[in-house]
Length: 249
Image 1 (spheres, helix red, strand yellow):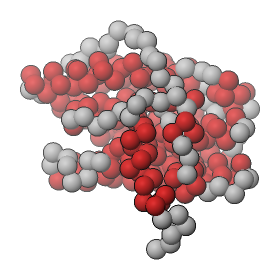
Image 2 (cartoon, one colour):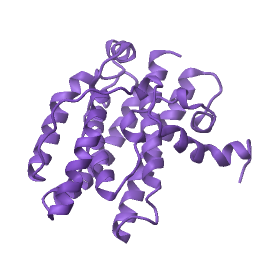
Image 3 (cartoon, rainbow, N blue to C red):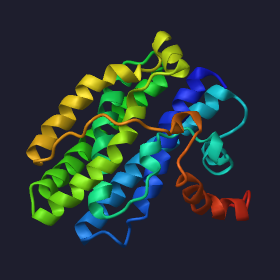
């Protein structure tokens, strides 16, 4: 697999897995408005994932399309960030996970809008508009919860502390990252850290939350080494397709 294909799959898988996680909230969110809001974000991410998976398939040239990539790979063949496969927890956990991700994705799409890969640049330019809305939504909820009641503050403070170690992976460069950055196709993750930190710190301050101390991490989802949660998610997501291969509606 070329660095370009792997890089695009990392972006696609991250969106696909997070869309699946957010879809679990449908019918269970704390209010109807948030049920619809979270579902709309999930659909945006799923739409981006489909475009990216189809693009990866065209570049790979092996006959795989979005369905084959989504439903016919094993756990170790997924390359999503470990952050997005974490369970939903309570609504505060989901808001925190979404906020940390949205602040990162805005920076990624801002950079990729200038990619030498014209198709990837177009996907990023369109996705940036959606990501900016997602960040306003998750950031707004984070401020509401963090600067809310003592209980809501305590809950999102715990969420921040537990999810923070997963953010290390967002900015850790590896050979694939360096290869696509050198070709002008992708962005070097470490270059995104200053802007992400500024976005995060500004919102955390408004939410009366303190930035956690640096923490080590033992997961590397973008290299296929996942936490224990992804396998269960994929089993549910892939079950219908695998039970009825080739079925058409």
